[in-house]
Image (cartoon, rainbow, N blue to C red; front, top):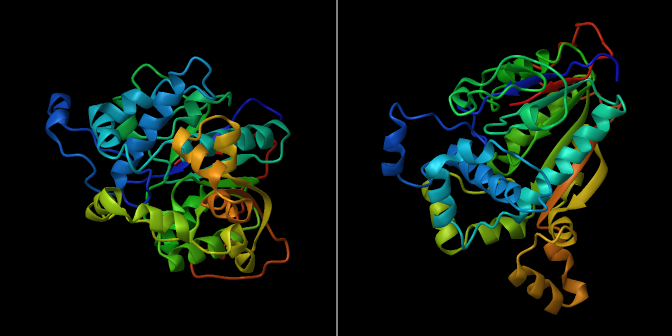
Length: 332
């Protein structure tokens, strides 16, 4: 894929409403144990990190994230305990495996030169995937990742993803290289109008060729609103919102066509990561009704439609940077 360089750029989470927003380190690390559990949507990043850490400890782990436990801290562990009965880690595991495989495949064959990871929060792909060099790291991660070096160049872009100018700055950071956008666990927390604006803005930039995302179904959102888990998410302003009944097909009118669609439920079952109770539930459910489980969370690789001519405020300027053969990886 040309020279061994990949640039990893990020749209930070502390100014966005992303579910994987960064956790700000306390001045005194020892005070962490006195903090409450899930307080705001940013704290879901800690929960995701715990799920990745637990998978990494398995003898036959599907992936290894040696920094996940350090990033999550004791507070992340406590949040996971509090939400143990309503927020299983199987969707995180299935999503991580699919996203990792897709990114590596596209980078390896030279299909993309850049990955723009919007609101990546505690994502550690620049460190754990086999993606060549780059200095730089998000400030809030540096303290916990002391001694670790990213395998690719890491660039940070500040902004609120709900604002057009912030979205424009994020895409500008790709320097016009063929780009894969990554929104992992993000869209479900956004309003539909914000998702549409993001989709249109990305499609208006010709160098943004692919979009890797996950989409919850209305039934998944209803599950997340029930009982204790629902109350915890609501109190932290982290309730699930965006859940189009069309799934990934929702994005077609806004310039994006599904190229590959996977079911997190089906993948987790095939990977032997679906909890026993859910496996039993799927087994006793009539075949005609199992599609509801398969569609709870869809993971999709979308491809920009070349004929798309949609325009939105703030994203109409084409990238003028030089096209290169170097892969560019941009984390958030």
